[in-house]
Structures are given as structure tokens and as C-alpha cells.
Length: 379
Image 1: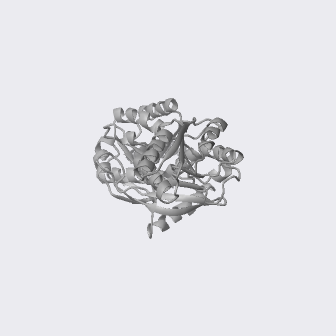
Image 2: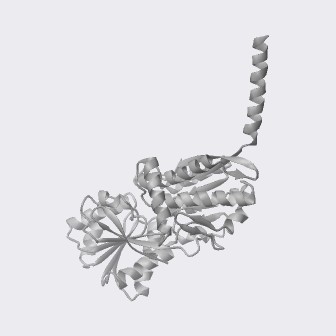
Image 3: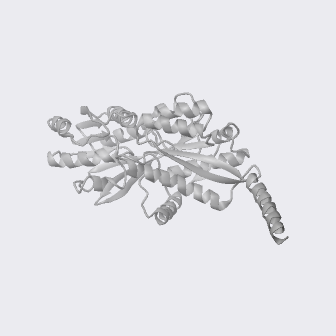
């Protein structure tokens, strides 16, 4: 008799537990970045930013449309490769994710965006800066950082007016990001009345730059701009030193990481490198960003590289739109995402009609020793 009662009690408990579980709303958020390959340190930084947001949301017990939301992170590795990126996007679309944060690189974000658009899944990139991404006419594309027109153009002007570059050389890695930011930098130099003395290109897997640097050395550049990522910029700085090229080295957010001094292996002179991060906060807002960085370090035992705070904000912004809509259904929360104003750790996030961040900031940095130092925030 006792055994029978226990079986009945267990069955009743399972029914009750099952009904409680059934009332939970499972929300699947996809994240894609290169967690393998030369810039895996940046991809992991991004993924950790998403993980931090998801863990916080679950700890808070967020309600969406009267149901307790249980957030799941579906993390994919695209290896910074466009083909791998579209495969990851298709996998997430097939998994019927409620939204996607990513990708990191413009070269993977742009082709993946068509897959998300066709599936009606909102996508917020925390770091893709090529203008084309939000100019394809898709209703599902958003970004939380300024684009290359702003970033490259500002750096080009800075190279002429502040760095006082008279003969400026430009190198890019032929990726959507690298070539795009280098093109805009060159336009910015010319608009400010400056002069470029050479344009060379490499690729995002290269380690030997002797030929292109020797060609540029003959033109006696006082500034070398590189459109690409830190994994290539570090060895390039080492080889510039070996060849005796004494020039300022400039680049966009792709080189503006905490890893750059290590990758350059002690060959960077203080103040030699000037780079820009596509984002930035001033005044009182700096405290929330510093608090985030401290919490991130405590959680992952790693310093923020570049984009983790933007990934965190992108995730929180997407969920805020779901809460406003009372639904995690992409078709229902997408209109709320378009008109949202969300106060994040990287500043206030609101999107224009293309999905670009409104009033996007840039932060200019240099390096002293192994530490990155802020020069200025510009809008």
C-alpha cells in the first residue's frame, strides 16, 4: 500500500512540476563569433559578453508576457570565415532561435544577414562596421557601434590634423572590414587635405610583410594605416621595426585590443600606435562601463578585449524589446526593437531607420608600455 501511495505521489509531483515547467518560456539567443583561429581571443571575448548577459537575465527571473523566461545561449564558431559563417547562421535559423547577436567580422556578418532576414530573425551585430551590413534593405539588421564611414573617416582626418602626417601609407587585409575601413580612412585623409603615398594589401592569415613594407619604405611614410585585425597588425609592427620604418601606426577597432602589445612582442614605442574603437562613453557613463569590466574580470578571469560590453548591451537591448512586446516571437518584438531606447553600459542604444546606432561614438586610443590609454571620445 505504501509503495502504491509513493508511486501516486511521485506521479502527482511530476504532473505539477511538468505544468510549472510548461509555463516557463524558453528563449533561445544565438551568438556567432570566431572562437577558433587567429582572432579567437576576440571571438571568446564576444561570446563571454553574451554569456554574462544570459546568466544575469536568468538570475533576475525576467518575465515576458506574464511568463518566466528561461534564456538559452546557442553559441557558434564561424572562424572569421564567410562560408563557416553562413553555415552557422543556417544552423541557428534551423534551430528557430528567437534572435541572434553577431557576427564579429563584417565579412561573416554580411552574408549571414540574408539568412536571418529570410528567416525573419532579428540580428544585432556588436562589432561589424562595414556600412553595407545595414544598407541591404533588410528589416532584421541592427548594430550597436558606429560604422566604417564614421570610424575610417575620423581616423583619416585625425592622421592629418592631429598626427600631422605628411606622407601616409595604407595597407588592408582585403576582408570586408579591412578594405572598407582603409577606403574610408583614405577618403578622410584626402578630405582633410592630406596625401597618401602608397596603397598595399595583404590577407588576414599573412605573417610575412617584407615585400609590401619594403615597397612602402622607399616612399618614406610618416604614418602607416592598417585595415585589419590585431593578429596581423602585431607581426606587421615587428617587421616595421626590423626594417627601420619609423612611422606612426594607425588602425581601426580590429587592432585596438589588449592583446596588441603581446602580438607586437615589445616593438611598439610609447604613443606610436593610434587606433579607434567604434563606441565610447564619457562622464558619468564611464562608471557603469568600468563596473562591467570589473564584473567581467571576476567572472571570466580575463580582461575585456574590445567588444564584450557591446555584446552584453546588444543582448540586453534585444531582451528589453521582447519585454516591451510581451513576446519573444521575432515578428512581434521586432517593431519594438526598431523604436527602442535602452540605457546600456556602453551608452544609450537607439537605432535609426537602417538599424544603425544613433549618435554613435568613437574612442581614440594609444598605448604606453603594455597598456591602452584613451585619447578622446568623438562623435
